[in-house]
Structure formats: structure tokens, C-alpha cells
Length: 139
Image 1: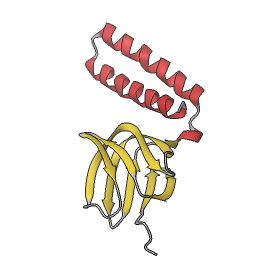
Image 2: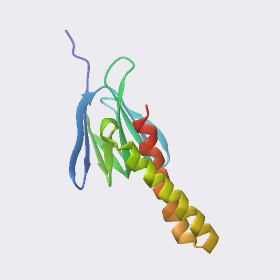
Image 3: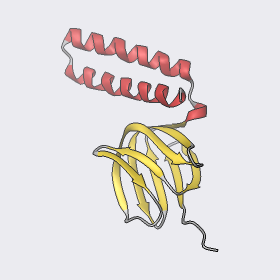
């Protein structure tokens, strides 16, 4: 009997491994759009956007990992995700993420008031990270 091909997924941060699994489908959002990765595809190297990585675990079920940028590299049926920060859905502290969202929104308002474009850009990135963590945790 032929075995269905699988790929191995590893998500790591500077603090260590966050997630490992095998699957037949991973969906990532890169800086140029969404990409689905299946076993035996051509090698790939891409920058990640602030978003979630979805790893198929069943017919209609997915594990989700919130990532704050980084990159993916796929070759030889191994997908390596190197992220500056990553959290599994079940590990996200929603109250902490909500506080981060409120702080970022306040920083955005202050930066607009002070016409500080650099601070505005940093605060917008912080807001995207907080919203991403909240959206992953609530699914």
C-alpha cells in the first residue's frame, strides 16, 4: 500500500522550537501573498508577513501558529519557519494581547498628533502583531 507523502514543519524563534508536526498541507502568508505548501513541491524561500501559519491536522482541522514576520524555507519535504516571535494558538495570552493592542492604538494616536512618521510605523507594526495574536487565539 502506498503511503501518502508528508512534509515536516518546524517553527523556531530565537528562544527555541515552538511547533513541530508532519502534514500534507501548510498555508503561510508571505510578504507577496498567501502560499500553500504540499509535499514534493519545488524548493522555496520567502519572507513571512505578520500573520498565522495554518498546518493541516485532519480533514477540516488546522493547527494555527501566530508569527511576527521572519522567513520560510522549504526543501526535501521539510518546511522550516524562522520567526522573530511565534505562539501556538493555545499558548496566546489574550488579555496580554488585548493590552498590547490598546497600547499600540494609543501610540498611533500620539504619533499622528506629533507628526512622528517613524513612531507611527513602529506602532502600526505593533498593532498588526497584537491583532494577529488576538485573531488566532479566538478561533
